[in-house]
Image (cartoon, rainbow, N blue to C red):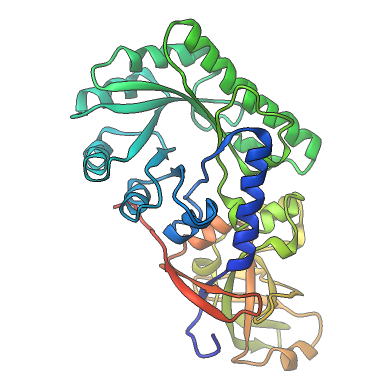
Amino acid sequence: MDAADTPRLLLDRARLEANAARLRARAEALGVAFRPHFKTAKSVEVALISHGGAAGPATVSTMKEAEALAEAGASSDILLAATAIPARLPRAEALTRAHGTRLLLVVDSPEMAALLDAAAGAAHEVLVEVDCGEHRAGVPPEKAVAVARAIHGSRHLRLAGVMTHGGHSYGSADPARVAEIAEEERAAAVAAAEAIRAAEMPAPVVSVGSTPTLLHARHLQGVTEVRAGVSLFWDLAQMSRGMCNWDDLALSVLSTVIGHNRAAGALILDAGALALSKDITANAFAPETAYGRVAEAGTGAALPLHVTIVHQEHGTVPVPDPSWFERLPVGSRVRVYPNHACITAAGGYGAYDVVDAAGQPLERWARVDGWH
């Protein structure tokens, strides 16, 4: 990588494989299927590794992700977790015709169910999204039956069950509180499914998931599957909450020291806001994180340095003393471990440079970025 242009998105294959194995084992221990989320990785190769090298169920955020997985044979059972809209149905129907893919859609209102039914040219399996406490999307469990009736009574939609996402679990670093949220997540989904069944409608799928709740759930009785995504890579936001360790972090950004600002006592990197994002979620629990932690380019060993200011293409790294100008001269390389892997990876790289534990290149994997 010494001659490669920067910034570049590095992915440690051994850490990725270890993280995936941990998640599979956790789902198995809880007695549920594992449906990893593709929105972070956006890579067919990562999707296959998430299931130990085989095709398996997947969660996606975009039709482009679903198409990539289906075309590569990486999944024939896909959940499109973002609320479906009529404009996506032609692509969904083409996907099923071309590959025989099972594509589960999601709605959280009778109004959207009606719009989908009017636009559909074929049958679609649909889940009711339940709000378990995040208040981003979904209906309270007690209102799930109304949405289910709209789906069940339509011409083209087939009621497949319920799903929810305990995203508010990211707001705590207390394992006991995360375990409580995991129970809230489970209970909301199970209650909605049971209410739908009591109304004599089907609810075979009960899908829950977030990285913290998967790790800390006491049990998942009544749940059929669990979803998680960022835990394949991990990041500083998750580490700040005690969900992972430094040696679990699989994603980093290779950057070049392009300048020394001796007056300000800082290194200047070519990894700025576009390369790292402006996400600072780790700072809630680890304020020193700023926009990312700097590490040695080869081994990824952590250095006591952080990117504290980002402009579009520049990152500023204050140094504690002038010796760092000799230790990291202009032209040298570093890695930056980001706050939030999902947002950093979406920064326009287009591909991962997959590396071994010593930072040596192994492969290059394309990313499925964008929507169309």
